[in-house]
Amino acid sequence: MSKEEILNNNTAKRQKCIVYTRVMGYHRPVESFNIGKTGEHKQRKQFTQ
Image (tube, rainbow, N blue to C red):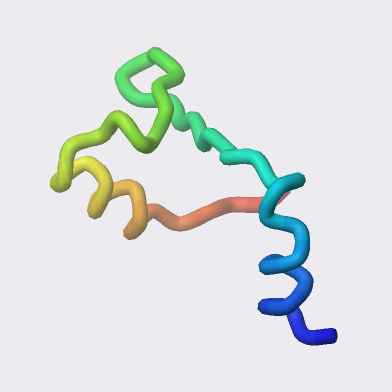
């Protein structure tokens, strides 16, 4: 079974994931950003410790 078939078969079980990020000292959902801030968020580098 391919990945697409698995996703299509389980659409009723899926739920939306809300991604938060820290902006100016506050945690805000990325989906509420305007176009410019969304582009800036996509260009950020992710660091792992």
